[in-house]
Image 1 (tube, rainbow, N blue to C red):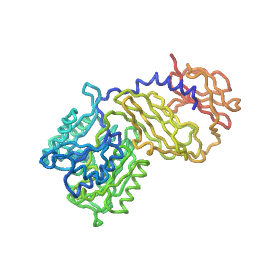
Image 2 (cartoon, rainbow, N blue to C red):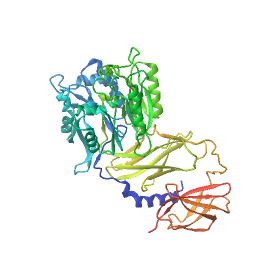
Image 3 (tube, helix red, strand yellow):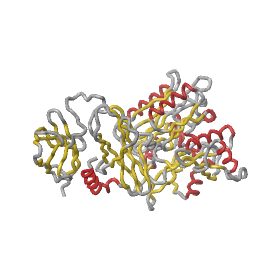
Image 4 (tube, helix red, strand yellow):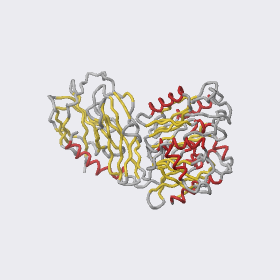
Length: 548
């Protein structure tokens, strides 16, 4: 760390750009499942064949957050003693276990439960509930659960104005929502264009994508998107794959083609990962609507933990576990047997409902992963949104076999914040994650950090005659500068070429340079990259120009 420059640089940027990055008000924000959650909500089904599944999910989810169990407050039982005793016997802990009295008829809380967003109703941002229509199944108690929760927790409640189940709504957290065309069947009096506009408006999206329903793959009449796809982060979508001989094979591949054609928040195509759907116990797959539909995408992400359905099929279950581990490195992947659920038309996701964290804070970052072109300094760009004052951001990284992360400040710049990993060498492998800290808490990206992180690496050779020496540094004085400055190196240097680049990599200044000369530029205020090249060496450093 260059202590003097870093302190001045960071403090100056803090004064210049801090206001830009603190978003004290968010009109409506619809979080994605993979963002920070307080916990997960489930319904106690009073069914011996399924109670163990709820207990196993609760035990796994407790490693990442709170667990709320909705119990029926009628004549039997009148309290939760029996439920608690059973859960404790299955390894569920009391510390993060809570109970909610609620009148229900089924355990499919994903579909009828509260859809929780953040909104501002004049008292600052708070969680509120959107109540989606669930009136066609003759289950009035299930349909009333969002109102029951809103009244119990004293939360605001709004109506969606559409008939749609929660299992048929998936969001990427920034730009887009997804549903199957089953929504059209449920709302025949509303045009597809109007349905799309309602969803965009109510969930504050930029776009909404409808994927073709899988009509011949089992699962019953619901035909939800969570039975064949899952959004893993802002850029990544997990999608089932079927054998070519199944009737919905072409439909599913057509949906994949649609997903591949879309752009994510960062203007790039989504990364599509395929995961083979498992067969039924007899080795066959569903070919009709009312058959059993098995899937690994119907999982739950709760902070640093992913709960994935399993089916007692070692070859398929282990393959699914490997795919999740590779797609979400560092997360805890816990498999829970869902065979008693898929025969009823659902799986793990269908019986769970995440509750977003009380205080909104999220980091928007296009991750840097995989093989990268070598550079001795890697610039990590991000933004942070919070419903309370943002105190700062941090970048954590470790190189190669280092056990401990190095923590460095993220410069609060405009239009994007910048974290700089310095002193990199050819062949390095880097693991990193980001943290945002507000007055009401903190959040990391990825949510599973520090065990989970993003990883990139360089080739051991860079294919160039330039020699990058980690210990060679540029010293630029003064810092910050009004546009005129001198440059000195820490090793012998006579003359070379001076280049200055904008944050976007655009060359904006170029001239021969002799050590110690005064450089005079007319560059406007901002952050720039200075590069000095001799015949064999390259020095790089950043500079802050402030014109008062």
